Image 1 (tube, rainbow, N blue to C red):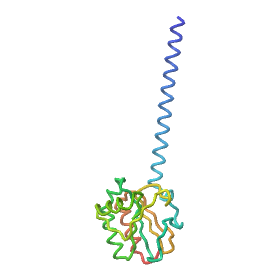
Image 2 (image 1 turned 30 degrees about the horizontal axis):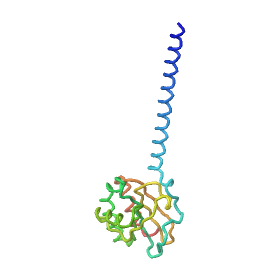
Image 3 (image 1 turned 120 degrees about the vertical axis):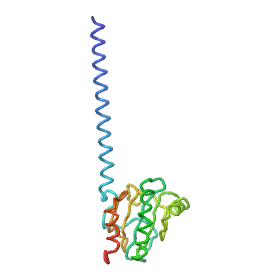
Image 4 (image 1 turned 180 degrees about the vertical axis):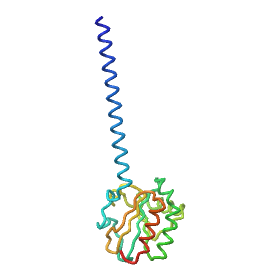
Length: 174
């Protein structure tokens, strides 16, 4: 009889422990999904508008508008966005907007990646994304001649957001 009570108590304890593990796992999954979705939908979490962009040794004054492509060779969304980036670079040339690609990889690897994707920018720079206050790639930033961030687009953009980028570039003043 005592064995049966101990056995029953052990089974109840095991069941309670399993339920607790499942609850904790679900809560952790919810936190990860919430954090990921906020990063994807909230560009302010990546870099604040109106702040000075932290890319060193760039003469922002050489152009009224500077479009920065923060991408990575390891980012499949960056690769999937390459067709849009090729069109965007052509539009930037027509609008006299300087283009700068910033990648966390070493310069030769970054340059080879961009060339392989057919994205020909004015400058290629190497910098860690955390140093630039960027949480993820791809990120597009429109920076004025003072080095201030005027617009931010985060992630692989749907077609309406791609149009928004082009429209913003074609506006005469920032």
